Length: 174
Image 1 (cartoon, one colour):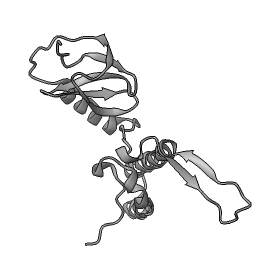
Image 2 (cartoon, one colour):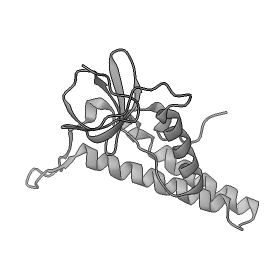
Image 3 (cartoon, one colour):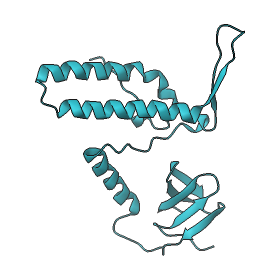
């Protein structure tokens, strides 16, 4: 079995299309278009779209990608890839009404999670627009407090996030 190099493009039956961003002795680290970063066993089943030579480089594609994401996040409205915690993948949210005569509602938890992260992204954009606006400082502070309280109201959904660094943070006690 020949190892794929960093930059190889693959198509995985579960995760879709992705790029190998790191290789270890046991795993490929692959950044997938729809699923974000996943680790795959070296002998996992996937289609190789384009194999890159296993050259040693002074900078990895992971580092380039990380830098590019930081630049895009700083200068545009592009949102980061946010992953749902593994235990919730493929799950469903079931809403049961108190009245047993009414029908319950099922929603894929991935869809619900996407909507929650979109709310977060829109709050972040609003925060950036407030901070760069011509409002006076007190008005900026007042509006910022509303956003912070909104984040605090959304902390109940932190259980859905794979990475703690991507969770909602409300006002911290001092």
